[in-house]
Each structure stands twice: as structure tokens, then as C-alpha cells.
Image 1: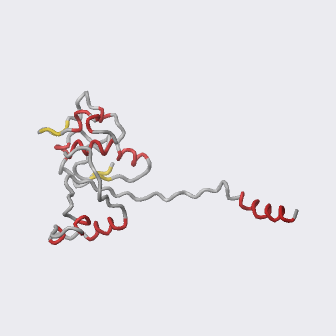
Image 2: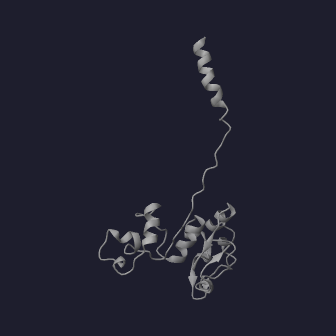
Image 3: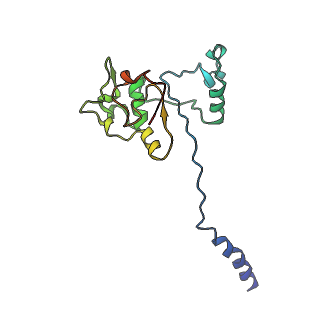
Length: 163
């Protein structure tokens, strides 16, 4: 009987914390996506010599990589920048992203009627809708609904855009 009382004496206070939840700290996300990052620049070049690191030093980006996640064996769905970017932004294969995934001399065909990219949720939109501050720079036309149609028109106009 004393044993049961002792067990209950320990278990009852523990039940007071069953409904307590701690808010999980949301991680910061810094996402770099370059057309041709290559294995010769920044943190990737530490294993390969000679490298661009002999000419250009990127200590802050290297530190961010060491403290975060660096993909050393990642693959892309296609070896072309725009379709790859569209695939990454939507989580779909590039051939399911319609003509908006491809650049031509006038930019991407985002306004085309066959473009499912216009209605697909984008990585940047999902983060923004979840309360993240989202900022983009350069060729980010595939990452949000709010961004305009042409990659060629938007490239280089502004140093960054907050949306």
C-alpha cells in the first residue's frame, strides 16, 4: 500500500505538465541557389586545389556553411537554370511546370495559358505565409506568385525585393 502511495505521489505531479507545450524555435533559413555554384568556389573548394578561394575569399559564407547544412552530393532535375529553378520552387518535375519553366529570348512564358506555374504554390510563398520574412535577389521569378512574369525583365533591376 505504501508502495502505491509512493508511486502516485510521483506520478500525480508529472500529470500537471502533460498539457504544457513549449513553442519550438523556428529555424532561420538562408537559401542560396546559384545557376553554377560549382565545386571550385567557397566552402566546396576546401577539398580541391587550386580553387577560386586562392583569389576570392568568402569567410562569412564558409562559416554559415560550416554551421548549417552544405549539400555535397545533391542532384538537380535538369541541367538548365530556369527549369531547375521552377522545379525547386514548386516541388514538381520541370516538365509538369509548363512553358513558364523555360526561358526564351524575351524571358519566361509566365503569362501563357498553359502555364500551371501561375497557380502552383511556391516555396517562397509558403514561407511568407508561415510568417517568415522572405527576401529575394536576382533571378527569383519562379519562387513566388507575387513576382511578375519575365525573368529577363526582372534580372538586375533591383538589388533585392521584399515580398
